[in-house]
Structure formats: C-alpha cells, structure tokens
Image (cartoon, rainbow over all chains, first blue to last red; front, side, top):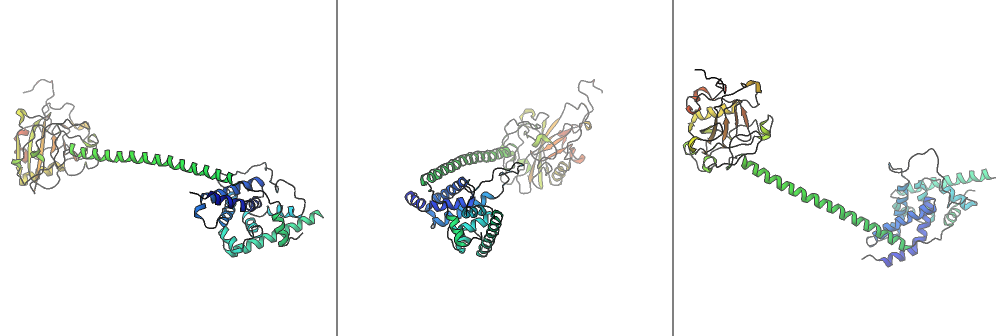
Length: 162
Length: 267
C-alpha cells in the first residue's frame, strides 16, 4: 500500500520550490506546471522505492525538461511563421530581476538547469552533477559559462537601455 | 548591470509562492497506473491468444506430420494405401503388417504381398524438386527384393498377386536400376499420344541386410513410368533386360505396345 499521507506531506513541503524551479527551467508558467506535475507523478509511482524523494524529484524535473527540449521526429516542425515567444510568466520584464529571469530563458537547457539547481535549489556542485548525470567538472564549466553569458547579456541590455 | 550571486539568487526566487495540489498529482498518477494496467492486460491477452493459437498450430503440425508419415508408408509400418495418385488423397486399403513392417530377420519369401498395391500420395503432386524426391527409393542396401505384380488399377486377380523374389546381385541390380531412373518428370511429348490400356503396377519390397522389410516402392509401368516410396520419385524406369527374364509377369508391358485403343487389331 502506497504511503499517500507521506507523499502529500512531501508535496506540501516541497511542491512550491519544485514548481518555481520548473517555471525557471521552462521559462513558462504553464509548461512549468506540467513539468512539475510529471515529475511528481514519477515520484508518486516510485514513492515506496526511493530513499531521497526530493533529489529524485529534482532529477526528474531537470531530465524531463532537457528531454522536452530535444527535437524529436514526431515533435515540433520548422515553420515560416514564428509563434509567440513565451515571456517570463507572460509579463514584460521591467526591473533587474525580471531582466535576469528573461536572460535566464536565453540560456540553453543544460545551462539553465545548472543555474537553477545551483542558485535556486542551493545544490552543491556534486548534487547538481548527480541530478544531471554529468561530471562535476562539466557542472563547473557550464555554470561559469552560463554566468558569463548572463553578465554579458545583462551589461549589453543595460547599455542599450541607457 | 553585472549580476552578482546574491542578485541572481534574489532574481530566481522572485515570484515563487504557488502551491502544488497533491490530489491532482495523485489523481494523474492513478490514471497513469490504470492506463498502464489496462495496456498490460490487453497485451497479455493478445500474447496469451497468440501463444494458444501457436501451441495448437504446433501440436496440429506434429500430429499431421506423424499422420503423414504413417500414410506415406514409412518403414515403421504403413497400414493404408491403394494406387498412385498425383497429389490426391490415398484411399485406405488393407495392407498386411508383415508384408512391410520391420520385425525379426526374414527372407523375401517370408514377405507377403499386399492384396492391393499401396496408394502413395506423391509429395507436391509428384512434381520435381520436392524435398526428398531425389533420395534413394530404398533406405539402404538390399539383400533381397520381393516384386509383387498387380494390374494397372492396383488390384490383384484372385486376391493374391503373383510375385517373384530376387536375391543377391539380382536384387541389388533391380534396386540400383530403380534408383538410377530419371528424377525429373519427362515431357509429355516423350510418351505416345495413346498408350496401351494394359498396364502393370509393381510393388517392390526391399529386404535389408539386417532382414528388415523396407518401405514398399510402388512402380507403375504406364508412360511415364513412375516409381515412388512416398517421398523419393523416379520416372521412366524399365527393368534391366536380364532381370526382365526373371520377371515373367511383366510380360511385354514394360513400355508402350504400339497398339492404339479402339484401332483395328493388326495381326
């Protein structure tokens, strides 16, 4: 029998963080909800067999996000008319925080996952590497590259505004 | 702006606060579980049906194969058969067990001729290239042969067919000549348009060196002459001249007589 009470407690304690992480990863409110829903469903189905549900949920989140960004033969097709690009929660960035969130959306999926796990989920480099299934050195280099891009983009953005 | 770590963390935390409804997650997970269960049951049912049908097919195939061996008159003892039909079903007739079944060592004289010639359904309707068609008509070296002579329809006058036993070199020569006959069906043009109405059917039962009776070889002497043991087939066999003398029952019917049915008799 599955421990539903334990799962509910887990979701109530960590659901908010996971949902926000999913939104940061996808850059979209609704896709973030779908992503966290899928990740928590996986956690529920394996609830009795996993020792560290939060780590499992984070891993499911980032792998689900990276998988969803891969082009599949049955997936998205090129089109002449570009669809509306999702903004950060559909709102125009107006201050520095929103600007950073917008720039985060311009990173590639793995860079975004590293930044979110390191600076939002406060994961160590080892934990981040374990969640993404990549070496620690790759986490370090990816993180440094992502931060550098954010700085450059932010500086350029500020320059264009002034 | 050049964001430091603190600014980045603050920016990332901005806007959090929405909760996740665990009931929604549980409901979705249960739906997925149910769908997965249904899929397993469906695939399991299909697999079970396939397994059952496959099993029935295999058992049926084995049963048919066993029946086919018995029908074609294997060395282990066929108990049915009549005259040779090209691909047609055999008409079961009585064939004495001791005439062909293996048993204690015996000589050709001890082998009884069946009351009617066995009917052997030719594999593939007697066409060339069938599996085993080129094999030897006899399962091994023959020490003796018993030749039973029937009329063209496979029956024997008076119920007991005339027969001849050949032993030693004569037996070997007969078996060799049968095996040496053509393995491909001759062209129909090789036969006269009308053959003699008088035909003969021979049943040649080989006796191995161990004294065991082999599968009977049924030989029809109509054109094209056909010899088969139910698997191997030979065409156009005629007995060696030297042996023909020892097979007086064959008479002059080893080939077309030149007489045309319905034509005036020339004397």
